[in-house]
Length: 442
Ligand code: 5CA
Image 1: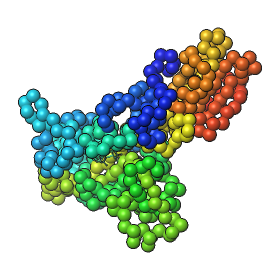
Image 2 (image 1 turned 45 degrees about the horizontal axis):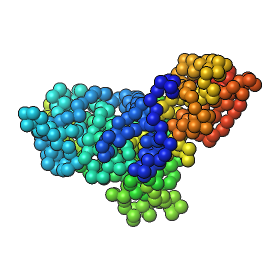
Image 3 (image 1 turned 60 degrees about the vertical axis):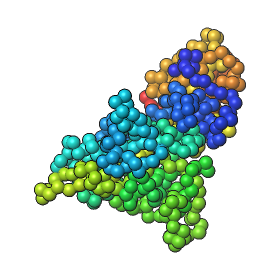
């Protein structure tokens, strides 16, 4: 992409309405625009990051055996009356009526709809287990939308729903999602710690929140700090096998959100030196709630013995749009964002210090072509403008690498390569810089 043809409305000043770094930086870097309280337009740079996160989540869901579909944002009120949640959900639900005065709602979550789809088609234990997911916009009329995408009213969620014949198989499905979550967050450069949590309006006894520690997080958490050094399961982990041990390993040390925190147990299980009280951002939550929806909604399957029984269910959410903010909270400095490579909107920024000068333009074009071919997704700053402003913009938008090409360097046969994380700069020939960047990528 050439910056002269792109749409990157960066702001020099920090907008007064933004209180935390991620919100400020998303506005300044031209990623996001507020259209109403808690409702945002995703500008091109922001959308690229959102898509990268979506892609990682999709890959890990698919690897764990979940199957993607797409449900609508609007749902019938009558569906929610079946489960009893239409009245229970309260003011957070956006209720709408159509021209026929039929009552609809903008979905805050999809347990009812997925149960309705499941019961229409699946009737035998032979078709289980099943795990269906989608990535779709949700609406919750939050009392206090704040911190930009962290607590929005309209937000993008990945939500998966598992269906099993009995509780044991249901817990195995839960474990598969648990492992997939550890992997997905780690691929985004995050340390997300699973913590015991309250299940709230979704329901059930067994629930974990996946929490990224950050001083600006909304939840208070209590944990054993040794969890921060735990390894996440490898991509080759056998999802068909027993994942109980991996999950027991990760849940063996104390970690709980304030809603379920038990000080007595915490102190009994955790040595004083290992205790860590912190704040955190909830980037995902998993629930196992058995037959909470399948009984009232009559989602039953026939077992091997011919008897009909309600299916055992769990649901598993990831805050895709919230993750963009969470990653920035975890990775920025005074100059701007520092994207972990797998979620960076572009892999490298090429800065042309003298557009219009033939040798510089030529070198930039060569670099652009080579990096583009290598799948690096370069962003070439070919705009008129002072070097200081260009450097500031590149630092602000946080691409992992900067390749700086100017007339003086070229006269000596060199360019500059800068790593955004750490700020290390090297002066070397263009060929060596390209070789360095693309090594292992060709
Ligand atoms: N049905 C279940 C799981 S599929 C569910 O709705 N779970 S949830 O309520 O925990 O939401 C899942 C994830 O969405 C949360 O972990 C959080 O990361 C994200 N999320 C929830 N509310 C908001 C919000 N107002 N703004 C941004 N992200 C949110």
